[in-house]
Length: 224
Length: 312
Image 1 (spheres, rainbow over the protein chains, first blue to last red):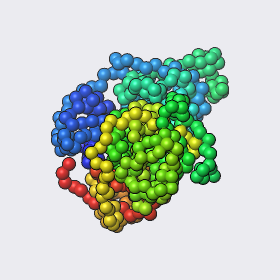
Image 2 (spheres, rainbow over the protein chains, first blue to last red):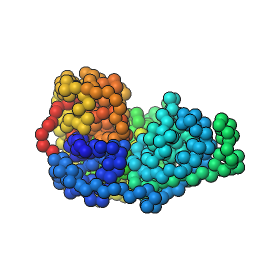
Image 3 (cartoon, chains in turn cyan, red):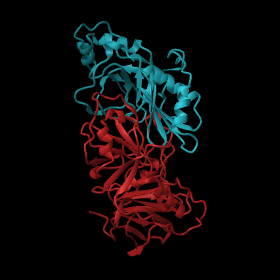
Image 4 (spheres, rainbow over the protein chains, first blue to last red):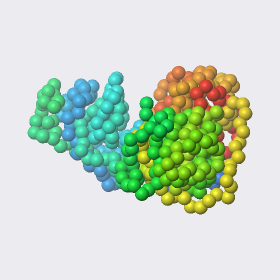
């Protein structure tokens, strides 16, 4: 773990890996060192803002290094947000091809996994979920879409997530949820905060892969 | 082009939650919207972990000052007007104040001063010229602009698409009742700046991704603010900053003042609407106290960076 200065009122703590970054974020949230303010967790780091009149970066470095990092409770133990998904995304067949699976198997693996919000970024309420089945790790699309609709469920690299609002995007789209995840009139505006446990549940009409029998290796029945 | 003095400007209430703004309540009518003017307050702190940046006035000190001059709380909503150019019609008599960039201004054609409270009669028009120096002009109106708050703030976040829409001709901006008292002073002196703006930087967090020569280059010759600059950040032209290592950085938290270096080697200085996380390495970060001055640099202006190693 390294504590790096980030201007006159923040430090960036670089963890060894994603798991340690999540433990660090949990520990800092539960027992914030004196003078610290906002925490911004990310893939391998936690940004910690501080009040320069109350502390300084050397003191913070000492406090952070001394923090006991407990195991983050398994995702099943916490309250789980269940997201119903119609697996009708335009990239489902391509993800299946890249993964060497059938679309149905992609859906099975995507719904079997337990996810956790590692961090938010890119856009308000966009949560990066970790816990993706390694077989479903696919690259971002070569050509990002200029418009991805709100509710699109997508995968890229080691993450899965849901586009909370219509925006440009380069992730591979597996399906769609109608569950509203972003409400800027609510407090908090999103249900997917760092640490939140998440599962995806397949819903669909007969003939869609979630409920139909096998669609064969080519997955023709998957695309709407 | 509408908005010539004397033109009738069709009204649209910019605040859907305040449809009564036109009747009874004091309001400002936007006659000329300027060049990307927005409503700003001091932003939405504390939501970055949800992917929501702070936003708010790019020159926070200037908005605070304008608010103090009219007896508002410092975080009341006002207007941020890059390069001036805005014309407003006051539906009711109001007290307002200008701060930030030095900008000629007129009320009903008579020149008025900045950094001092202005009494504007009902029906009068306030017109801004082009700043003689600095970029962003701020207007506070006694009572504060009362557009609907989003996530606790009336700031327009131009990157995230949160908060009020940008100013357009015909927009009606309701004025609220946020004023608390009157300031002790009626005029705020200006701090004269001569020569190029010098911004103090703290190296890191990713200075180790660059050659030692890169940090020296950053603090050597001045950089020039390019036209590719907005509330998100300023793209700077000057010596390219050479990376000592390749590869990609997983997205990490970003702060205002960060000098993020894309593959071109030319740094981008992040301002109020910067992305919450980013993947290009940050070689150094401008000290918080110097950010307001950075936000007043305009395209073509030189910027110098000075390394600050010691202390907090």
